[in-house]
Length: 405
Image (tube, rainbow, N blue to C red; front, side):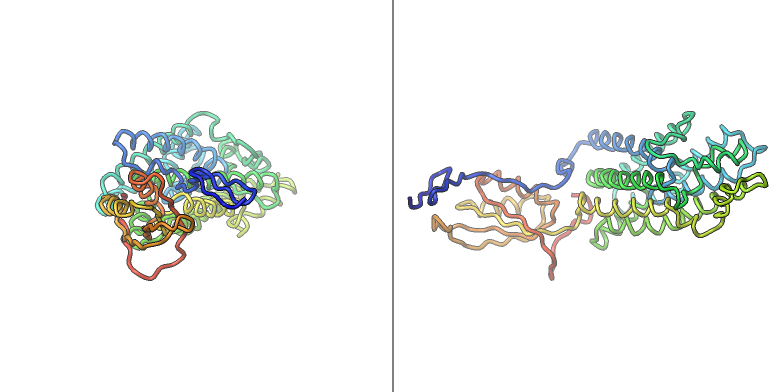
């Protein structure tokens, strides 16, 4: 049949090829990269903080996983302090109030110097959004923790260590969930790992949303953002390394110490043989390297992987734009865009079918800037062909923003 070229289809032999527009490029949460009014930033931050405050209770505190950043120190200290209280010192209600305050609120007060550091080194908007997020999420978690019975709710599994709970004094029974799981508690371990995977993934989305709009979702995120900007490294990786170090300390103070104290108290003369098999783990390395510790590390791994996908701050790509007769205008609009600073190269090419001369505009830029480049190109040439490919490595200079753009 030969070969003919039509405006919307190509006939080659016995096959008809339709000319179809494809656009499979997409950066996650792309709409959040645009400039927003203050009320929108506050609204997004508040809604995200409320969601984070809720899941922190049921995915972190109640099941024995640790949150990230300096919050883990507050959570560890809270678990240790409440175990040290004696019945003649405080009531159960007052003890819960103290626990919730230390667990959710105290670390924010102690972090004021870091907020000031962020204000000076990173920016006013960054610090304001960060403080708003942390205050709202902490108040939500604190309020839920004061609701009777809320601390004993488990979506799946049971982390109350029932056998030990019954051996403790009535004053200490509600603290039995502080004791880490043992490796022979199969069903609850599976449930705990499910919590860890889901929470790590949700946490990555939360951090990505707040990072993109200009803040961060944790106190250590302030330090991480500053360091990431200074060294041009992935925020997710830096944040993950910081979290691992913090978790190593937090588990020692918040799980191993209080867990061993409670197990020692449960190991009385009336303890059954099965209970003694559990309580003999007090002060052992097994209590430290518990399923709770592994679950927290698993959460961190999922968080790092997901956050680097959602928020590829310094990922580089090669963008090639093929336009028949508007390449000069495309180069100009990209160069004049105040939100894009990148080198631009043009070279000549010939169309394979039409043999027409066309210019190709190419640039190496940040992945997160591609959406803006595409919008600029479409203003000039709706029919331009745009190719985006990953850049594995470079040797040279590029422009990187020091702050949010």
